[in-house]
Length: 143
Image 1: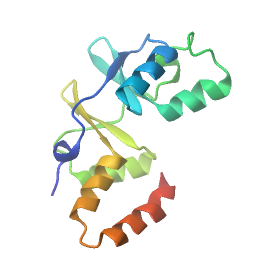
Image 2: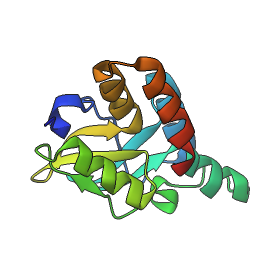
Image 3: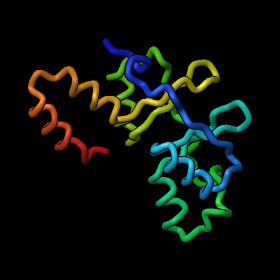
Image 4: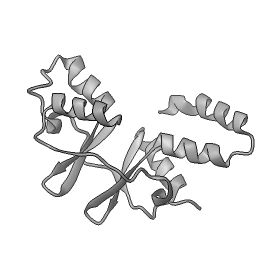
């Protein structure tokens, strides 16, 4: 059975909890990513996603230059071990309604696993790719 470490994204972009949202939004756009892991010194303490920026900052008309990451991040950081199986990680994501999970080994963030990673893995293994795609599309409402 596949482990999280087999399909996770290894390059994780981290930011400091004191950074402002304009800086973070620009960084996410430059890197072409949908989330960043928030650090307090050497410890991962939360995550900020595009959705967090929209719902917790912009929709409340907060000034992105004055709003810090720690003001809107999802915390505490929910994570899995690299040895966690993909189905177990998927169950956790579904139960929490998350699209991303940090992968943490000890105190270090070693990767991030997303629903897209899981879809790519499932799709690559599917014998009937059309059936798998229809299943994924019909089940997407869960997220």
